[in-house]
Image: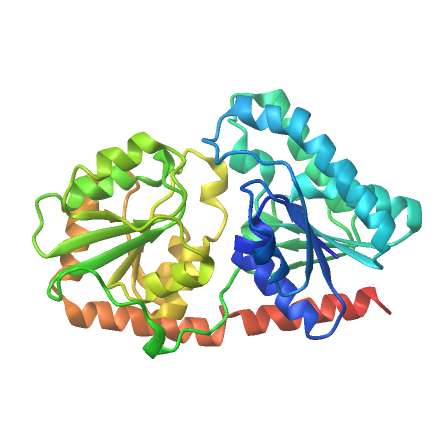
Length: 372
């Protein structure tokens, strides 16, 4: 049984990979939350039996007030619904994705002596709670530590540095990176809508202030033969509107995971910048890094610099340094051979170390140990 809040059960690439892998060997059901009013047809087409809690909420701009509102008002009904579903389905193993899913799963584990896997996609406090709210930050972290210690298996998506932040861990724990599957035939790559001679820079993800997107738009504003294509949910409309003032910026809307990968694969450069003031951004390994490797596309980023430099898959910049971003883009625009070399380096690293097939084997080992 895989439990994940929101429509991430359908749209989250990690959940899709986990469910797909597990169905090769086990009987799997999935539970989630239909926040955006997904059609029943799409739910029925999911790879396993999927049941979604029906309470529609809008895409929301992150803020402490909204986080607390959801935790105190919206989540309790979802947790109760999830627990009832667990009572009906009686799974032997529950796979809980992130802190906001684990409470009913943990109660079910204790009452019926079942097995619990806790997969931490994001450390909730580090990713969502401002550090100046020390008591709340500490409380949320302590809760996550408690559930990690009392699960049967702790899985970390963000890498070894994230694992090291846990003081309390169960006997069984592992890192299962959010690497993509290798499934992008060249013939399926989405054709570019920009001019043939233009360099195509792509960003896929939330449109929000802490991604330096406006700085990227500024960096390319005076450069020729460049287009910046973005796709993803708009969490801060002012950011999108500011970017779209430039004719060099195009917005493709919200794409499903496969569509986003195809857009990335059609690019010349991928870019992913993260605000270093948010603690989470300094320790986790972003999905976009591995996706760029798989797509054989060089990446410009300010995080995971050790891996970027070690593999030679891209170039690093300062998060809010417009001139640094500009000069790095220029360097790649004017040197096709450099772009090709960086892309090939990333592809080699993907095949050798950062692919889902390796992670899938780790997942199977965990399941086999749990079911002994």
